[in-house]
Image (cartoon, rainbow, N blue to C red; front, side):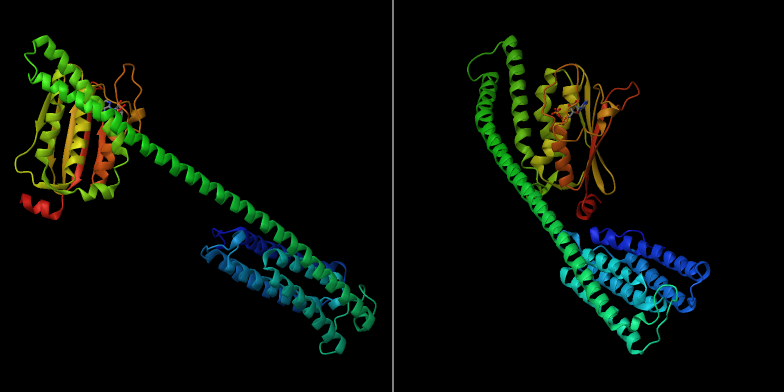
Length: 463
Ligand code: ADP
């Protein structure tokens, strides 16, 4: 049967349970009828009762199919959808009608089976709105009266079960009045009790939900506050650290360029090393600062047509002092006639610089770092290959995450932001970035690659 649960609130779950219970009730009624007829030998005509049971089977099948197909709906407070409530009402009313008909064929109100009404009224009080619950209680009293009244007045014949009640009890007016009043009091008492409990549970649920919502809002505010503080400290870092460092770098460069007199060879070597360290520190600070400026919209604003070759050359020039200091050879291979690409040049340069920087940083002294550009049909791809130690498979899947750094024995400066920054920039261009490591047979070396899509115009430029 297609009664696979529909995602829903508590009422949806109750309704599925209700349908399951109805199957059990059907089995119990059939068993009860058979026992009454053939074991207890009551004078009961089975056919009409079984017809009613068949009707119950039919509508329960329809309910089960309907329940399985209904899409999940927006829930009201306390997780109940309006359509769930309507569906519950239809089911309760169907049951009340079926029970009234069945009651008629098993002795009317003379038998205790009318107590089953309590079951439906109880269920209704839990599943329905308060108003509908009282309406169901009223309807039940009405059906009870209708059955009793119709039999009393002789509009329908009475089925008398010899062994269960004295003859003519159904025509005993006093019995009828007392039974009806008592029964109605029990029904409304049950409805009042159940709806009060359900209402209290609903209020408690709502209070808890509101408290949870308040906590979420407060957590959100705290996060915003932290974000503001972070931005403040970043701005502070930018001003208080970066500015003086940039001045130091300028002075060093001025000394190296001979503005303040002759620099001997030994001084030059030491000064160049100091300069490389200062530039490294500036790049580190830039990495921190850039994290907050990597929103794709901001990158999109800076896009223009540029020659990829220019971007790559600028990056490699930037890296050259550091490479020379480590005696690493930087080799740039760019094919002739590359089309111009639509990119944010400053950002793209940062991607290439970050990859070259890592390549040099992890290369052994005297190593080789190769940057190669390829153009394929729809994309242009840049590969940066180094002869460094490679990256363990354990870390590969995290390498492009914010602040992720591989634990290494020797100290290598970095903030764990270079690759994540590169990823964000490449993705903002609609491209992809990936790593193959190790990339040489001896278990060493890394190849970092990224590709950028070429627009139809860029492709036709090439042709
Ligand atoms: P960082 O600025 O700290 O280098 P990255 O995001 O650039 O941060 O790199 C993250 C980690 O990936 C680094 O800690 C480093 O160990 C590893 N890694 C990056 N590039 C290479 C490479 N070419 N060879 C070996 N390991 C690398």
